[in-house]
Image (cartoon, rainbow, N blue to C red):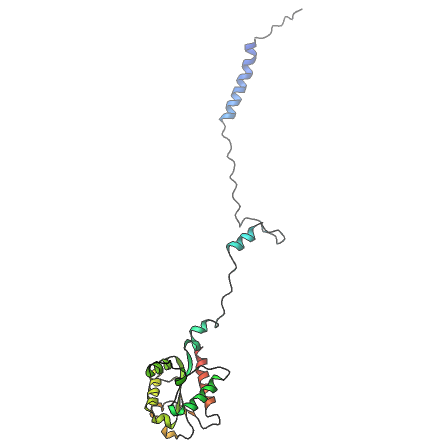
Length: 228
């Protein structure tokens, strides 16, 4: 037997719920989505401290060593720099000026200086002058290329006009001497015979057992030491 309760029409049953759902959707869609906060990048200063036990990043040390090679240690002073200054800035340590008749005495002095522990570099005119060179030019070259000049003053030196020229050239290269010009007064020569041009310089007395060679060597070494 059929119930007497009437069923509502289908259109009236679905209309109300659909209207509520449409309104809810409109509210949801009308709301703006919340903006997500942008995460700040971690800077090196914000990064947590790294423990010494942590393993190194792979490839980091290798790349750093490849891009930045190890810097070589600075060169020590006084090694190669001294080649352009000081003693090695000139070709000779000393130029020995002498008369022709005193060649044997000059050779003896040069042998003494060159055989010393300092191995002094000596210029001897007849030995070291360039063959074919002009005598005056070779003398000036030797005086200019030597730190010190030894004047071997003997009776033959005082008689020889060429020796006087050597003496004046040596003085012109070093007017104030400053230890560069070293007169060696030979034994047997009176002090009154000492050249007037050299009166403002002390001379080495050759009357000693070593003929004054040791004092000459010490004077040269003292001058060379002051250069460094």
